[in-house]
Length: 223
Image (cartoon, rainbow, N blue to C red; front, top):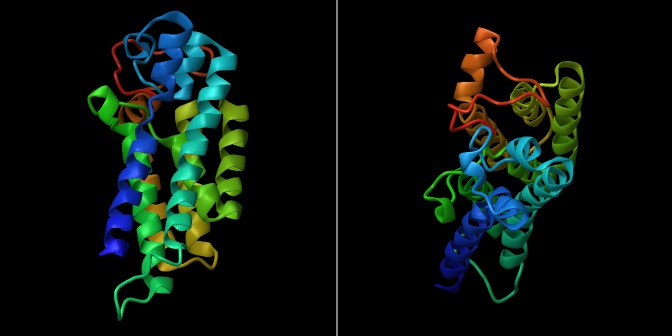
């Protein structure tokens, strides 16, 4: 019973950690505004950059990455306690990685659908990077490198985020990784890409703003 209680508590914690509305708090603390009413109306670091400036955006970005890292680290730590033992017949070496991966998805879902913000939020790209780094740092660094290179070339955050997600999928399939990790990276990356549906339409139309340009105010989901 203790094992299942700990598992449920870990998943709830991962979701609540992901739900922490860093960008929203930054807007309230620094300017007394609801950032969801400005720029692209997202709580992500990109909209914080447009609305509040570079310093707050960097802080929000780092905290959002750390949310993903912390969710994975906490669930691993919790299930490493000697008092939290799985039921007889359940191999922890095989089962715990699945729990860790579900926790990663919970953190992503929390960032994009925060319980504190009426289930709105950001695109989950930064939190997803944190999850990647905690699961497998080579994959996380590879995705981050592609993000940085594409951003430097095209200065389009959405394009950089989606290509980083596709890179993560390619790397997790190419490298030696447990099946749960592969499924998490594929599912998480596709979730992040799906959160960019409006951006994809604007990229196709050639109207997606570059870094430093104003975002279409009508888009409630840009990151």
